[in-house]
Length: 165
Image 1 (tube, rainbow, N blue to C red):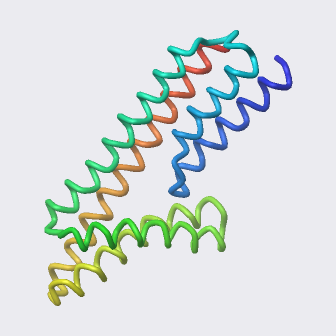
Image 2 (tube, one colour):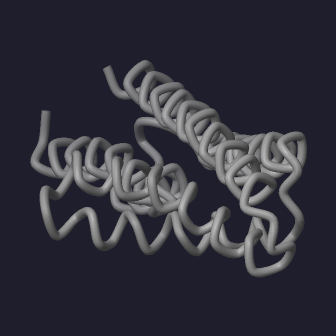
């Protein structure tokens, strides 16, 4: 195993973990693979394989956002509530990372989605019960979306590992 291989694997693993921060880690894995392919003259895997990784990224991202939106809507969230959930999730991940880098970011993101959706929905409808229900839907959607994103990252890493080893 060369230094390039070790760096590639380390960046891919760190990219997977960045999903927990709300960073598009799966996309980083795909770009890491593209750079690895260019550096190694596509010795380990070809360009078609890298395109497959990018396709996996698109599918996973689509499924994640679809799940968040559908779950939030099922619980009564409007576009305002969904937008608040997205903003709250990002804000929560950033602020939570200041307390503890990994766990704080995860907890902050999930709590931020709930709080953001609830606040935005409340300012739209002035109905606290409806706003909290929307927040719960966004919260559940975020958990499901995060699960899908991590499954996608693990799938991509298994695909890469199969090609390299």
